[in-house]
Image 1 (cartoon, one colour):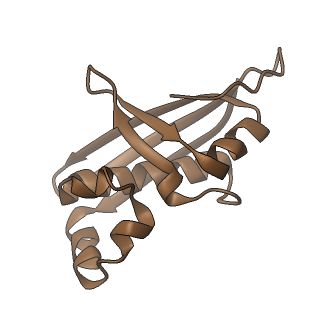
Image 2 (image 1 turned 90 degrees about the vertical axis):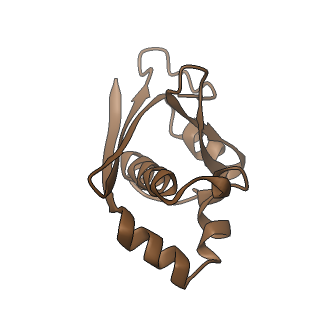
Length: 128
């Protein structure tokens, strides 16, 4: 059962200017591995994290650096969640997260669907 959806759109040039003005944001928003990526890739990851927070209905207990977007072998993006953020997902009974990201024409976008297995009440750890 779908329990939340979130979408976000980021202007890549504006995002890049913000990072240039305030470089410490990189460490506050992204894992060390993510920080090595290009600005357009970072903008898409920022959009994904914002979309996840929207799908969750808020950011209580969620920490930006505990949300990492990692690709599987095919290149499909996955959320890798750690710390209290992983705990929030479990507490809310979310058993699946689906993520789609894209960047084109100066914009980055992400869409997230959060699912729960309401029938069994399962709250297994998620890697979606």
